[in-house]
Each structure stands twice: as C-alpha cells, then as structure tokens.
Image (cartoon, rainbow, N blue to C red):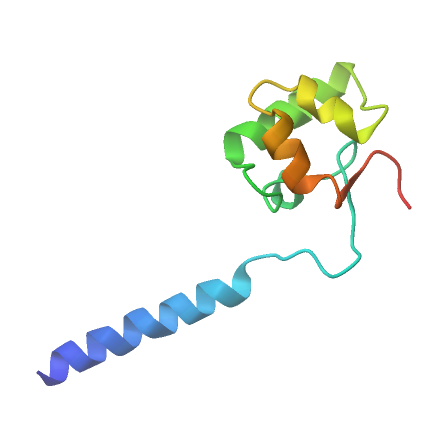
Length: 93
C-alpha cells in the first residue's frame, strides 16, 4: 500500500511538471506562421508535429501572404483556420 502511494505521488508530480512545461500562447501574443519554429506552431489548435512540418516545408517556397493562406497546407482546412485565426499573423506585429 505504501509503495502504491509513492507511485501515485510520482505520477502526479510528473503530470504537474509536464503541465507547466507546455508552452502556452500569452494573451495578445501572435504567432507568425512565416517565421515560427515547430515548437511554436504545435501550440496552435489542431496542429501537431506533422502539420507543423508541412507548414514549415510549404513556406520555404511559398511564404504566406495572408493568414488564410495557411489553408493551402495539406491537412489545414477552414476548421483549423477558424480555431487559430485570432493568433496567427504573416508579419510581426
């Protein structure tokens, strides 16, 4: 029983640690989809590693002119754009 308590506490401590390590978008902070690194892109809603890689690959030859252009990336549609349109920009503001 005592060992179960220790394991439970270790798991809880680990989860708390991970929750504080997650990057978050500060209020009013924008993400420039032309310059953001992968770590920043995965903060966006519905964007994981694969989609972030596609964004980075796409913009090498086709810099985004407007935020809506992100929908030209395979796997990003209206739903993903709508979920992130308030935090993505194409120029630093």
